[in-house]
Image (cartoon, rainbow, N blue to C red; front, side, top):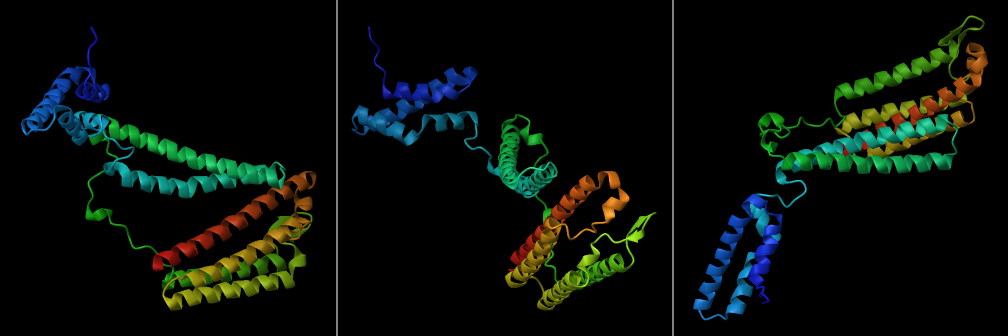
Length: 320
């Protein structure tokens, strides 16, 4: 004999699918009793039984959501207790790891002599993969921790106190920042002049030799000194205005692009490093050493320019 399945039977069965076996029978009986009581109350008020049953089940909502409430099972990937910690850690790692990975891959591929298109393709693919992996594994860890029975004692999230308040961010407008910038520029100018007229690398055969090409003097080095003076004036302007703004950050970006672009062009033309330096110091491996030093020097120039530009924009953003 066929058994008629009611909406209530289907609802209870759907709700109990995700309930642990040990609790299923008791919760099913409790849910069915609650539904029957509400249906009978509506029928007693004159509502048809079929309509009353449908209305009660509609009010109860999705059976899976109801079952999650019975078993205290969260219906979110990362809940409010861990969300801020998860998001802060994710942003921190995204700000550091992909850039380091991209820099390392680009440097390694360049030293290996790969074509520019191959280097760009590998850098992009590795960077995207790193971003996805960081998001996946950090989220997975927090997902497991939040659903662990010992999550309350995990120690990942501690109660907030006023000691957790962040320190005010540096806006780059203090007198110490100005003095540090001016001293750094002065030392850099002195080091360049010392390199040109005295030398910084000693060779038993040639004596003291400059690291930078002597052909850079006077025009290229003179142009660099002009840019350094502009950097000093920019630092003074930032101090006078009380902080960075988008205009000064853009000027800083332009100066960095000019300096880095000029250095990279000279490196590509083998005009920046003293061409007699490595053949004198390591005649057997001069070509390899020159290529490695040139590559590392170029990536260092790019990294410094990028970091200085990004830091200025961040300070300008915080100053708003």
